[in-house]
Length: 142
Image: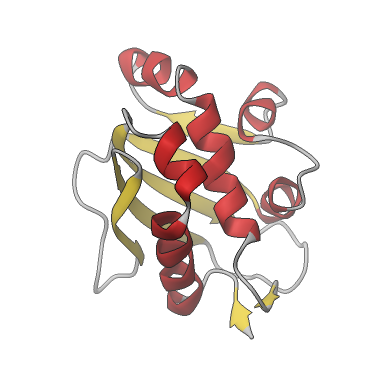
């Protein structure tokens, strides 16, 4: 089993992103880095915030890791996509999409106005990125 929010889960995501031909095609013109922040909300047993850094570059993931005090995120990350744990589970289950989650205020994006416009033009890439999370096998959600 791979526990969501663990370094092993992040490594599995890194592999799935880089194996995905659909993501590579959808994100061929995309470049930007993200922090994906999961906030505990009483769903399951997740008790600590989990934040994942991903450097996405033209259909590939150049780097991905769990942010810890020993391995912080780089300064000036372009995007922070944050939501409560229960909403992440809905996203992974396909009950909400990445944009719908923002529109319904289930997720918050922090970035510049210019970066937001860039992200809105890459919705297919965002959808394929979420699909990569569903390809990770034997996931245990705490």
